[in-house]
Every structure is written in C-alpha cells, then in structure tokens.
Image (cartoon, rainbow over all chains, first blue to last red; front, side, top):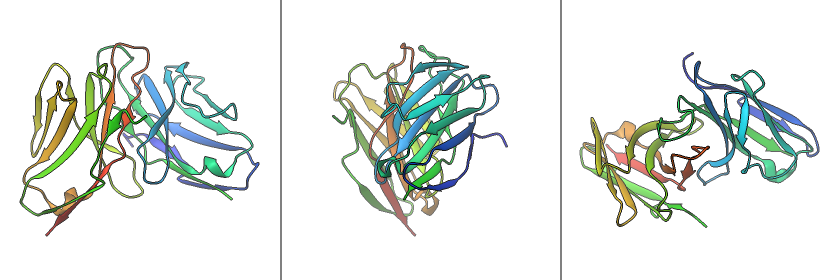
Length: 117
Length: 114
C-alpha cells in the first residue's frame, strides 16, 4: 500500500515484558516520527528521525523506550520492562519534509494499541 | 502546559449546515498549522493546513482561518455531511528548527446529524 503501515495493530503484554513495534513509512519519506496517544488525548511526540539519524528523542518518557531506523526506512520502537502506564496507542508518521521551513504534512499509520496487563 | 487547546470536546451539527471547529495556541513561534480527522481505530488523516504567512486556506468544503494576533484558528466545513462525523485534531509546529514535531490539541468530536 501507499500509506504508513504499522504492526502489530494490537499487542497485549504482561508487565515487565519487552515489546517491539514496527513502522513502515511511505516510500521516499525522509522524516519519521513516533507519537503516543492516551485515551481522550491528542498524540504526543516521542521521537524523530531524519533518514537514519535520530535527531530528537526529547519526548521519550524514560530510558526504557528506544527507537531505531538503521537503514533510513523501517523503524522500530522498543519498550523494555513494560509498565501499565505504557498502555496507549503508538502512532508512526512520515513526511517528505527533511526539516526546516519547507513544511509538509505528516501522514499517520493506524497505530499499535498496546495493553499492558 | 497545553500549547494547543481545543476547548470544545464535542459539537453537533445538522447535515447541510456549517460546522465550525476552533483551536487556540499559546506559542508565538508556531508557524504551520494542520487539521487532522480521526475515525475510531484508525490513525489521524491529514485534512488541511495553513502557513502563518496566510490567513485563509480553502480546499473544497474545508476552509481554515488563521488569526495570528489572537493566536486562534478555525476549521469551517460547508456543507456538513454525516461522513464528516469524526474527531478533529488541531496541530501546530514551529518550522525552521531541526524537528518538525507536531503539538496536538485534545480533539473535538463532531457529530453531523442526518
């Protein structure tokens, strides 16, 4: 497909387990973003990649959260030793915009709904 | 501290009438604004955007107005259709930096009644 693809769509894990969430951005999109959306809230920024470089990880809530994009396309968000407060929808977005003033909209995937028991 | 605010959690409109969704922001560095539409169990879908050098942008039934002095923007949908029923998010970013991360409001649930 032509859109942003995320997998799995749903993930249930026990507290303390590690999880990995995958994002396939739109082909050719330089920028990739991860957001976390809690129930009843808007998405909140986690981290940003420009190609393979992670330029901003200021939104990651703790050092249990780790993201990578080794070849500048697919990205993985990993959460170690999950806790109940990690339960949320994790959204991935991509855009053509390499940063700077050439604003381009971000296009979102359908997200991964993570539930920690 | 909420930098982007959508003060109306919900809005109900009759089919064929105008829907007006409002958004306020506090950061004067924001220079690019977007509206997203979200259906349940789907990701946000980009709808329309506006740069701070403009005060209006129109795309079909959707028009976004920006009032920089009031730090306010609004989305007008005319005429409203039942398929427009969704949650609408306002978002903003400050271009020119290394990250074009979006700051989102909390959303407004629009219900268009047939």
